[in-house]
Length: 524
Image 1 (tube, rainbow, N blue to C red):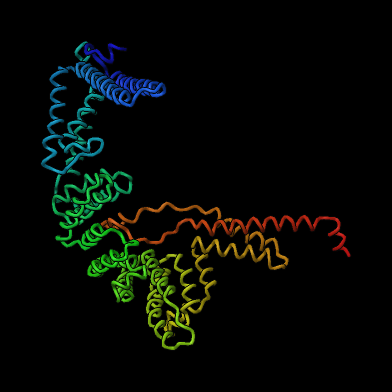
Image 2: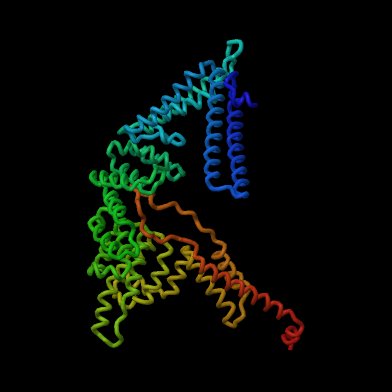
């Protein structure tokens, strides 16, 4: 075993090469574990910290040296088995890979695919071809006449190397052909969990000054997905894409400079002001503006805050995206609900209040109905709130009349029918509570229906949603705080508690009906 791992004489076939490589990794791991055990023992007896540092250096030198030595020995014997001189082959391969990483990599940002993401396409092809050659190429026959299986393996190794070369050249070379198809491959790679592949595919397109590629590569750099995080590079990529007409890159450049809108009110107001010119070209900027203007304190910096929000909402209406429409509609509804209430009996104060809340509520109504029509079930519950609180203030146009046709509870029931999880739980809880506490006898059918509704709420599973930032052709570095159909934990817990109470109540009722005293009382 020692000669096989550390000796340079002899030959190794393909399977032996793989097996001894595995054995070498086990030996390196055993060396590291031995040093760790020794270090733990020395720490237990109170050896100073300098001793631990020395032990760590010795472990790194021993494990690293043994690993390098075994790798060279195993490679040398495998190369000799193939029929080549080991020393020139290994020196040439190591030199070429070192030159590729240290020199060629300085002249281009183009990188090969993982696990050779530090190499240029040339170095990556060399490393990949070397591995295929060592694993697949048959050894030299003792008789000098290769068998049929050896010929097949040689053809397979050559075919794999050629295929990888062609695919890599097609995907990594900065060609100005098949650009839409390559962008589609980028989307599929990212959705499949291969962000490094997506970054490698975008790089040559970005070098061609493709605006979409520049923006999307900037998003990956800013998020640190598939490539090291670098805000400076991301800003430069966004600026280049914006110069080539990308409105999304202008939005991303503004967001990366100021960050997302949060509790920093002055920064939120500045971001909203900077995004305002972009809303006509990119409705995503309008959603960000709604987030920035959410807090009342922004009105101190932007006195026209309400009008800005309504203008942004008008831009959002062009998207037709139910989730985005719901986000802006709920934001305006919350603004209307939290406006300062008028002083009772003061007509001037009531007129001031109506002048503030009516435009907000009307635009919220338009957005929420648009979201509902787009198939977003979460829009019905806020429509019920809007009907209850502002329905009588919105006039008699067809949309306002439609809003007042149902009460708050009826709109909630519509949401439950359309699949809104929280609404389903609230409606189920109400049905269960009514059966238990209204004091009237109920049928088995009514009981089973209420239990089934509660169980649908409790047993429903949350869907895994794809991140929104890369759904569109041009990606977002920061996404608005859009609502999603998340698990309504509190509503589920309330429905479950009500269901448990009903089940206990029903069991107790059955038991009481079957006792002798109750039976006798019913006969009388």
